[in-house]
Length: 259
Image (cartoon, rainbow, N blue to C red):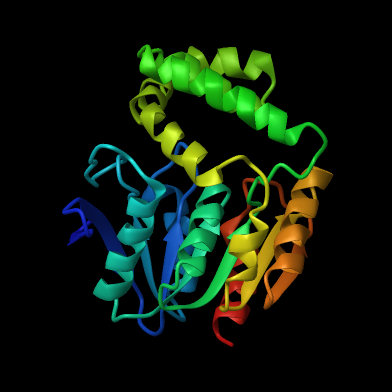
């Protein structure tokens, strides 16, 4: 990240830009930094000025206590100001929940696109989210970062054998380093349910996208966003999973953001 901006509370937010044109900010999800969405910036930068950034508490960005979701919205406000005062937003997974919050807060946002925000639209989803919150909080409070990462991976549906394999891999140390930010994403998701009052207040056009190879509830969560936002629309990407391929997603976002 070669640039920095100061959020309202003084926290330094690291970001980088590529391309020219209307500003687009890409927002990563849980267990990730700006580098995770950087591959998507490559095709988008042919049409837009694209910014990727490290959310607070990750990568090259700073952290301040106590954490509050409102601070992350202020981080986006600072980025939008640094990019000229208006931007379109794209968020993946829980990053999508963050950009929906930002749009609902009244920031100068042209359009919003989200990919598979994991709202708990399935039976028992709210209870599962509550149990995850309790166990995650305990693990992080007790310094059990590895256990926190395991909890998150189970929440995503990863098989136990794969989780244990990951724990023995070289990448595990990096995952433990970023584990405290899991609490941030959990706070962004709230109770896990699609926040109807917040979504109905969004005035910017919203595109909710899901991959056809993802679980059915992911599609229903995307449809719920599209149905609830006054200017919402839904799109399914053939053959894609939660780990969407940038070259498949980019043309859809380009078309939407160019409107």
